[in-house]
Length: 441
Image (cartoon, rainbow, N blue to C red; front, side, top):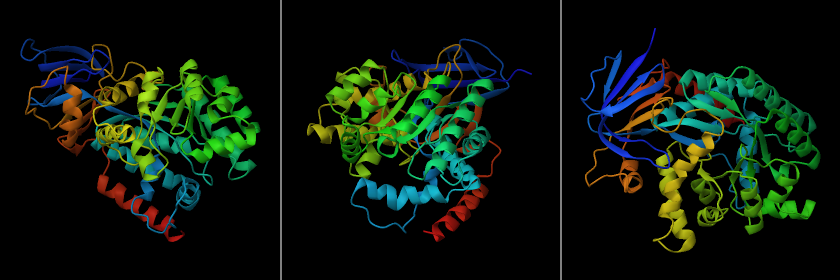
C-alpha cells in the first residue's frame, strides 16, 4: 500500500546553496519521497493525509552535527564540584556520569534527547557516546531508541585509554562491529562513525589500531579536536606536534571524519584540515559554558574549510545554537557587523556534512526523502530568498516547531507526538534512572 501525504499552503524554503522561498506552494510525498512541488491549487492530487500549513514557514529539518545523547542525565545535576579548568569539568562531571551509565540508562537518555529533537525540528543527528562500564551493545541500544523515534542518526562510541586497556579494546570492538553491521543492514536511517575521544586520552598504539579498523571500513571518524588549549599543550609535550598534525599522521582525517570544536587550532592545522577536506563542527554554547574559547568561524570560512554546527548537548534547539554562533562571532571579533554571512552558512554546511553519510536528504526537492518541518511563523516583514536567514535568526528562531516529518512519516503534528511513545512515561522512567545515578555521585 502506497503512503501519500500533501503539505499545502506553505511558505516553502527549499534549503541548499540555491535555496529559494516559494510562497503558496504544496508538497506531494509518496512513500517517503518528495514526488512533486507545485503552486497551491494548480493540481488536484488525492493523498491519504493532508497537512495544511496555513501560510506558515516550511523548510528542511535541522541537522545536529555533534551531539551527546547521554548528556540528558546531566540536566539539574548539582552534586558536582566547582571546576575552574576544562579537565576538571571532564573529571568532575562527564567522566563520572558516563561511568555510571548502564545499557538501560543509555537507551533512556537517548530516548529523551530524541524526543526533544523531534519537538525542536531536528531530523538528523550525529551522536558521540560514552559509557565505559556498559560499552558492549551500547550503540545497538541507541539505535533502538533512534528507530523508536523515527529520526536519522549517525552513532559512534568514543574510544579512550582513560579507563584502561580492557575498556579501550571494548570501545574499538563496539565501533567496528556496529559499523560493519550497519554496512550490511543499511536503510539510510542509522549509520556509524568510528568514535574517538580526544588526542590527550589516546595513545599512539590506540590511534594506530583505530585508524586501521576505521579505514578498513571506510567509515570516517568522530573526535573532539583542540577543544581546550590543554589538549594542544599535551600533544606538543608528548609527541612534539600539534593535534591535527598527529591525527593526520595516523590517517584519521578525511571527508567523512568530523572534528568537533577546533577552538585552539592554528593556521598550519587549518591548512591540513582543508587539504584533507575534513569538516569541522563548531559548538559555540558549549565552548562558552566551559570557558575554553570561541572557534574562529571567519578563519575557517577564509581558509575554505567546511564548518558545521553542533550543540554538544547544550540544547536540542539548532536555531538557538545558530543565534549563539552569531553573537559569539561578534564578540570574538569585537565587531557586530561581521560574520552574518559566514554564520548563515552553518545550517547549509550541516546539510553538506550529513550528505557525506546519508543519501538524498536535507533539501526539499523532487526525488529527495521528505525530512520536513513546519514552524509557527507568519512573516511580519517582507520575506524573500535574499533575506531568509535574517528572518530565521531574528524571527523564525523565536517560533515553535509545530510539525516534524522524517521520510514522509509524521513524527509530530500540531505539537503532538505521533510516534506511539508515551512521552510522560518515558520521562518518568528516565528521571528514576537519573535519580539513582545521581545518588551515587
